[in-house]
Length: 465
Image (cartoon, rainbow, N blue to C red):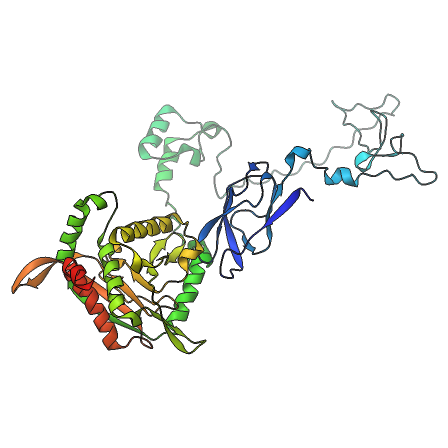
């Protein structure tokens, strides 16, 4: 049995075909155990950690972080029996002795082949790989003592001196700037860099006149770079993973299910007071609860009264499938895009269990560790846009669901209460639904019941449960 085993990228759920390697949790040479997390991979649904299929020593990592790998492709190799000793290298396995041809010099002998394709030679000797070059002589060459004396050439006739040429631009000679202390002070006071002036004084020194002329000379206008509108001022984000799947689902839903959205503004002052009383109860002191808990409970109770809202349209069987269970999805914004994990069978949970489930769902989503199983099978969803300070919206249905609720921000608002204008806690709900399944009457009654619960949750719990 081979001791080196290659671990391939598994199908992480529901026929996914590829995944992006986010982070390697091990390195080559690490000793790992069975089921130890070795890599974090993002699929089209979530980021998950993949455990090792075998224990042993990591011998190779096939793909770097950031690479998209197809399901079934090898990603890591593991030596499952490192105690058996080192693995023979490919070079040692390939090293075989070949008999020399007739007349050939044996390997290792002078002039014969040596390991690595070289030629065996004595130390200090060997074939030259460069042409010979004569070392240049030092000093001034002298005439040979046997050379005959030569007669000096006749002097060339005198030519008239060329007229002096005045350079168009004065150039300062290289080296330190020459200037007297008063001149240096004048340049410093005027903000002139002496190194930029070609002096006209003795030995090229800078004079007072040179500094004054430098100030009087017209200064070049500053170069203003023209604004560019190209790739250098653009940022490109690859469309992949969760964001790619979300975009495809939203487009498919928007152009498949005919959306209708209704809005309802609700006085939730009593809900906010009930929430504070709930926080003070011993069984809720160690759990974080928010208005979303009451909205979720309102949805679950309203679904019991109007089960058609919790259904799906089946093109394959030409049926409307009503679900007797509610897998309650909560839209969550993450660094990788929008995801909608769901609480399975949320209608069977107590209020405390529902609070725990919502907290766990949100925390897992923020950490990017939501498993694919939590992303599938949703039947009804809530989008809590209020956490961003938004009043409400027109949410798009997740694929396969008949309705989705947008829960807006709770704000102190002037409100008519018992015939008088008072400041009350008010929010706006937005319900989008698939008009093939839910007509205007059903959608209105469903939204009205959610509003009634939030207006007085304690009374609704007593009357509806």
